[in-house]
View 1 (cartoon, chains in turn green, purple):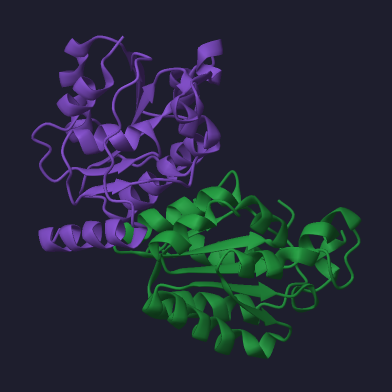
View 2 (cartoon, rainbow over the protein chains, first blue to last red):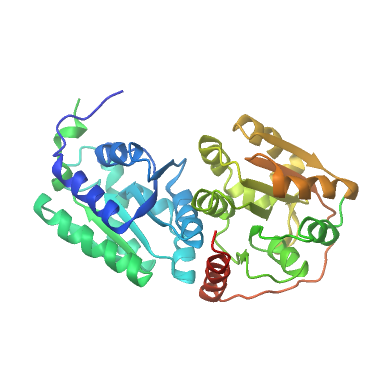
Length: 177
Length: 190
């Protein structure tokens, strides 16, 4: 397996610490290089059910089902995955299911693949249009604070919160082999 | 061919503490017609998402039984979720597809199952513990037993008649459906 070695390790750990703090019990994801460390942390935690999805859209249903059963759930996806979820997001808005989505951005700072640009350019706007509060993180030192605030708003207030992790934060180097 | 209302009524008879998620359209009307219940989560949208809601609920409540009742169109739209469920292997999840091989809400256009696309074989290929088609009303008792005791994940394709039946419309307010469900589940304390 190709394991990116250039990822800054502190910010995924800060996200994971917040998952632990607020009691996230289910995490849905489509495998992603930017989220690889966070995914590994969740997989190794016996208190978190990690659910690998065939499409990000499935994760929206997962969040709703978890909430019906009294569990908090988070979704990890790339910006392209946001586009796969748009109609399904109506489930969260319509029923008031609290949800945190962590989005690794593609199609911006230093993107080598132009095919990522059209969706990456509209990701934040698409999230807002579907009812999400959005917060964008550019610097690793802001991750704990913003993810913490986002988790609290989502789960204390049954709100839909998306946190965009900028491509500059994630780092360009991991996209090269 | 099964009478859909009679079949669903038999599945949900004396349901105990069964948790039910119903897919948009006719499946939601069938579940409502069998008797409104606070542990019904009725979908009126989110097409393709019903099975995944069942998975999230089954993972959150491993000691409770979860039944997903939905149509062939909804299941086809979320067909990848069968693979996702196959990975997680929830023992307490049963999916019942009310398969009339048509899209009832939009004017009875033929679905993929009409052309022979086989959801039972798909479920087995996705490592479901058990999957089969039923078409006789006498089999309803067996399917009901699977809902309560079968080792999941299980998928049943119930071949129902294309006959149109009157709509039975339950709660439509998503917040109310959710809140009622959660309160009933919390009251059970397990």
